[in-house]
Length: 114
Image (cartoon, rainbow, N blue to C red):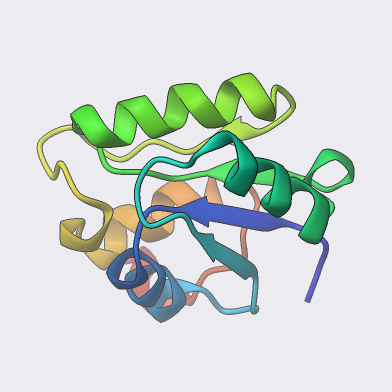
């Protein structure tokens, strides 16, 4: 496992992403927006200030709110976006998800890159 950490909203997002990843990556679920205390805990517990952080959230109001919050706390984080027509990470086809992750140098299963 490399040092990357991927932040997503929910457990279904995590399951969908794990399906397409070839190499294990630490995935952190926020379960929605975070309070200041919880955000600080995550930063400390996962050493987020000193790791490559990637943010992949739903393309909806709650996802955009979370993305803004994470951007404020983790300005070095890289953003991965899904097509707005899918709205949710969990509803995004595996091939689309694989392409989005691959473009940020995540190792994905080749079966999803056809």
